[in-house]
Length: 484
Ligand SMILES: Cc1cc2nc3c(=O)[nH]c(=O)nc-3n(C[C@H](O)[C@H](O)[C@H](O)COP(=O)(O)OP(=O)(O)OC[C@H]3O[C@@H](n4cnc5c(N)ncnc54)[C@H](O)[C@@H]3O)c2cc1C
Image (cartoon, rainbow, N blue to C red):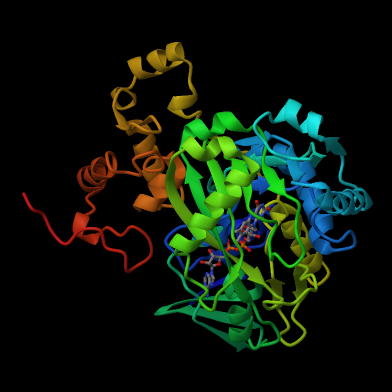
């Protein structure tokens, strides 16, 4: 007989993990089902990592409301969960006078939504804050911040797990059967039962809804490509810098974003594509991103690009449509017991916890959600070795030989941190899992030096055969055999 849960959440992105975490405050039994071998493998791991203030969306929209709420609570949530966060502020720039009405519109929109700390800045004010940025004027948003979306999503999942939720990785929901009193969710030969399904499957949310008998939604993937710049670029800007959003661009425009880990992102582009899994990058777009970045920040010309990636927006409006596609969070009108989250594009990362609280309110209209006295909101996380002062490093390393071996030289990641990453509570033993948790393989050499050392640790300490290792997913083998 299949195991039975009160609620099954489909999708282990920031939104699904936030829902699992918030539901684990209640006494309900909760299962989180994710098709990949880790959480945050979808859009939640491939975005700008900006904690938005909420002035980009129409004031009455759900996206604006939840974004403002998410931004206001993000720092506290990160403190609780042991996730890095920095309030950086943000500039939306006018290249010329013709862009200034666009900034005024954003300012009015933000004020109508209750966004705090907004102001129009002159060229001189911009220069005083960001001396290298080219701008005739700018909208300043003081409440915008940055985070690490991979660690944020992992932390939500780990906290949900610690509070009793069960997490099933490598569980692509392939069929959903309705029974007299709930559902059976199938993945290959595995199956479980649930009274309620919360569909947080991101790009695939329309398909998951259809599996459960509700074919009333359609998602249009829209790809955003990025460049990652090497760390010296971070000396050229303090806050994310965006261009004034031109109508019809399909995103917020190509911006420059300092990352919490010390790099700079350039992007994203916005291109509707037919595939929901094509996160490839293209030479044409990379060249265009670079040109647009130089318009905002000419001093980038000497900086090195170390990697590129792409994320896919789950849009509910097709290419060319001018109307705004708001977040949809609702009980299915066709399938009782199914609650859908559809079209959760930007600012879905920022709004993930408010989205989760909204899901709890909607569920609470149908079933009792008794609170669990033992809920533990805090999650501990160690300070990375690279963030320690030299004396602290020495003291820590004196008691632990694994802290004396630097495995990733670019990001100063020790053997201890690799082992801790591999001993994670979700039981993820993949290279991308190590990368997300420790930052090994994310530096200038992109793993050229440390990847083989991490492979050796996986083989020697955990008995994983190199021939069985995948970079990501099920098809990306790394090795066919040994040469010596
Ligand atoms: C280019 C770009 C830039 C962005 N920048 C920002 C930003 O700066 N700030 C911000 O707030 N937001 C930003 N966003 C939006 C944000 O990334 C998303 O709103 C958010 O990550 C959505 O989270 P999610 O959990 O809904 O989706 P996802 O992270 O995609 O998670 C859905 C999960 O469901 C799983 N899944 C799908 N089908 C199944 C199935 N059948 N069975 C089991 N599992 C399944 C997937 O594998 C995936 O892990 C950006 C988005 C993009 C594309």
